[in-house]
Image 1 (cartoon, rainbow, N blue to C red):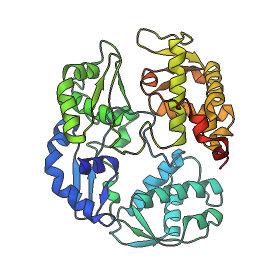
Image 2 (cartoon, one colour):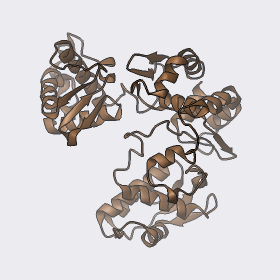
Image 3 (tube, rainbow, N blue to C red):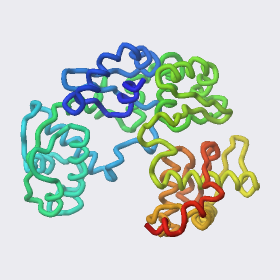
Image 4 (tube, rainbow, N blue to C red):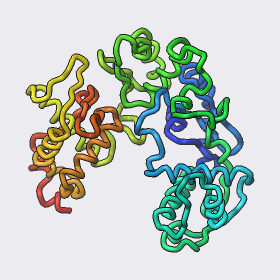
Length: 385
């Protein structure tokens, strides 16, 4: 179970980084290969240097992507770095200027790459740090921060040898694709995707990757599958991952027990996670008091102004227990952070050009609050540290 969690949690397992885990996963693969292949439709790539589980989503969602990136330029830089590494052998060395020259000559965007511009150097630094963090490249000598201050700075790198396995294989040229929907379907236009093995793979992937799978009505074939095969799905997730399945009228999800420690889950260790738990409680109380009225699908649409009012009340009632950053944060900034986090976890949807907030059912399921005597226990003096 732990080995499968590591495959799911990490982009890949590199033998050079963790030889013990590499061999442990390699030996345990037969225990859960049927679950990966038959239920999730996932493939395992294994060679003498790495093991990778190709994790494809059942449905593209807004939170998916590389969290370290915040512009399309960084994604373009990453693609160009992969192209640069493609013909190199493992452990081949190169210097930063080789990459910068290659990117400048091949960048496809209308905006020309100019390394004298700090924003372009910063984007490349983000890209190279991400590549180093996952093992695509290794830094042998130097520091990217020097490049932030001076575009002539040199850094010595080494090819990690896994770049050709970073991007999944497609059965047709992606140059013919026009949207992310084409990536989801990938040459399955003539197949009924709402039946058979494709629906099973999609449902299992959505339950595994998404915070919640909402019931979208009578024509929702995915939710019908969850209801019809609930026991089978629950047994699969319990057996292989120890995750219970919760199915409600309006949504279904697998729930992580406290013994599991995946990254990027809710509730998590970030300060904003605790604040959102408290916001969810405040919203639930507003529903109970009929200040927020739900429709037949347990969804409510409120104005952005009203949400800001709730955030101000939240801060007034709870900020004594918050970190200094959030205690001193303006309401406008606090609202942005809360909404970004809630939207990533499918608790809200921002509509009408940001003027309205659609509050979704998951908001009311996971809530939190301080103990009644938390102010006395924590003490004002401790809050100043």
